Length: 392
Length: 193
Image (cartoon, rainbow over all chains, first blue to last red; front, side, top):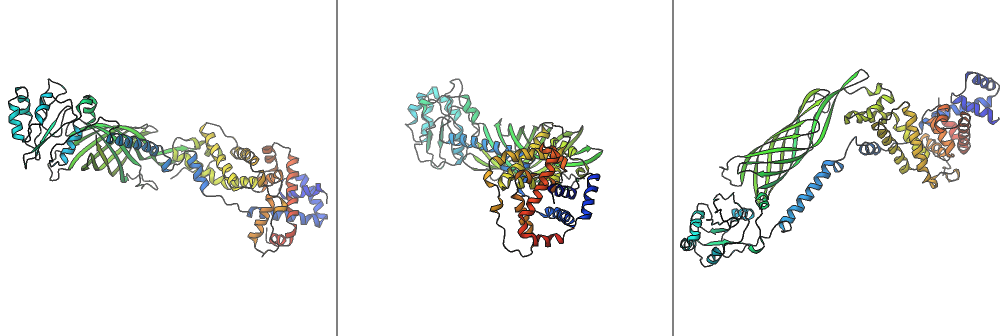
């Protein structure tokens, strides 16, 4: 058999001959059983080729989806990367602060063995120490009894008016003597333990034994700066929500409890009760919409992962509870995403842990209002959040 | 209810790859993937004969398709474009893996078969791998991807007669390679059709 004939047999088995060419080959086939066998072989082999299985690795699909941005893995999301960077900055700032890299040096010298309770710790972190008035410095080491100290000070007319009004003797653990040297026109007025202006010195009296200790610092290297006052009123919170529930979208797979939702917030303590500040959120909302293609309409749902800044306000209830470490608050947030505003309400509590750290938990309701194809929709979410708060 | 993508043409589904709604784009990708992934992977694997390279070329092909859609490229022949992209990637990839070619002499055929069709089909598959690339490619496009001779000619940029010759030679050469197994193959073929 010539190559030309065999080539036509193969082409015939592949259905690639014109009707006239095929008729010609059929004529040859009728006369030649060997050619018939050849055609038969190629026709059957075509079925064998179909049985050759080349398994498609299952991971390739997800690789393409992730690579092209149609799907994501957690550790590659922008939110995670931003979170990592933010956490790094926060940790660096925290460590820097703790080790006085970013802060001035506070060199307290506690002269006597005084029972210092945790409130002292809170106070210590909030005050800053100016240069000590030389008069005051001269007398502070001469007295070890609070009453004597106070009465002797009264003979000093220059300090008397200030000292008498500045002794706070109504706290549970101590009295506080404070003198403001940062501004000679201003006498230390603040008696509220939670609100100290810059530039004060503290005298603690132990109520049980009437001994006192004066706290002072390394005054030579210190300059009073507004920044320190501001810093003392800032706090930083990082939170993550769990057990989220969403509205029923009336579509398949509408239940998705594991919605991404986390934030970091920097708040300013306007007063004891009201704090406000900026919050950066990574949050996932369920969305639904319709799509028309080729006269076919379909309803879709998707989970919209967005990152946005919001303004937050937080109101603390007066602390009248048995446990002074516990406080309750209500919080509101309004944020702006690329598709519409976000509103969130929280009610929760804070529990003071140690040093400057508190744990924060809240129940929350959140809603994204968005427009798709001219229709206003909202996406609701409720959940429970928890986090950590750091007071600067 | 999801969009009836299965009723759409390849080109219509392709246009949805760039939809700003991620779920729509993802569904469109899933649809095209279900239509072409098996054939495309077979092509990549049989051309490159190397798992890692085939995986790379396969993934890169789909990624380029998605990118093309996002850049607004208008598609008139999706299947043709898909295989053209895959072919270019495979040829580039092939430059790096010359040493992985299978030669007839290297094929380790078992001396005895147990009338196991799977084993026999595997032998045919390996024999296919030993064909020269230009023959193998034509055969794969014809038998695995169901391209016509003229479509193959367009894709490869050669005359129709060359395609016909290559496929004929590919099949004849395959027959020669499988000659030692003619009895088993004959048995296998008796059960076909």
